[in-house]
Image 1: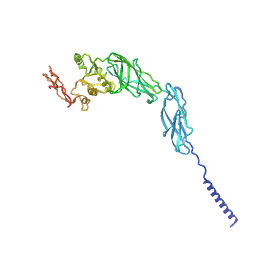
Image 2: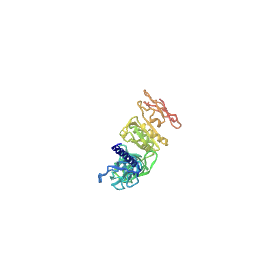
Image 3: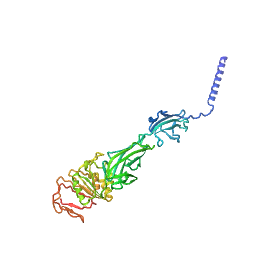
Image 4: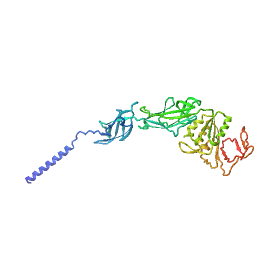
Length: 431
């Protein structure tokens, strides 16, 4: 072996030894590296506005987080140094509150990321948000509310909202004339006022949101036999109230008796009004045909229900005309529009005398509310001219205590109907 070869072998052995030493040194157990906390960023980082340029109390915020040695599992959020709450979301809409009586305020939000090992950012992202309170608003819906004059019931409808969000509404407030403000539920959008007295003067009113149960609140200051002004406003969580809306010159009529004449027939109004006066001098009139049905309620239920419930007896005359509803634009015969209300009136013990004029072109389908409310199973239509004979008797009594009636002329265009099985037939006609 040459000297050079021996030196090379020795060098290789030394190199192999160094490699083994290096490998063993690299595998030597050291101290475990600590988990690094995540970092958090909120968008925007700051909001540099104030006064009237401040944000409304409904604010949408975004945030994000990074973790150098793991994953961001979610975020913990604190408002005004309150307790942190956890969310997996990276954005949310906040509805902040402003101190009562204040128009401006600021709110501090802290957000910290939390990683999959449960560690959180020890230096949370902090955002101070300048806020301003926006006034809420409430406005009468004059298209649906009672207008000009009312008898027995005032129906009110309105809209209400808050630029800061509907959830920022606290209540709705209502007042009549010089009476006191009353506070109503913020979600209420209609109310029906029933005066406790029908005599001229100042009275209180029971309040209904439907036709069944009165609210605990009552409204004072209503004027019977005089014009009324009603006031409406909304109040928000900061106790700020918006502009007061008014409904003016609403005349509330006196109640004269326990009989109500509901007229839906201009042609027959004078005749039946005179007949009723001859036997019942003190009664009230609701003319639903006047001005092409302008006084018809926007919603029959519960306004019309609450009105007729105040009377022991109702006389109802109606023609075959379809009247457009001033609020909805839909056209219906009064015979059908009032059917549901009269059914409720029947079931509560009310007495109704109804005279309905139909024609051969009247179509009352099997689902018409008329058949559910009145004791009629169906109507008999004829292409010919059905007449009530000029005979004595022409109307024949079928019940004890009711007299027969004679006719001094032939009555044409008669449209008979078939009674229901549970109806009590008082008269039949000699056709």
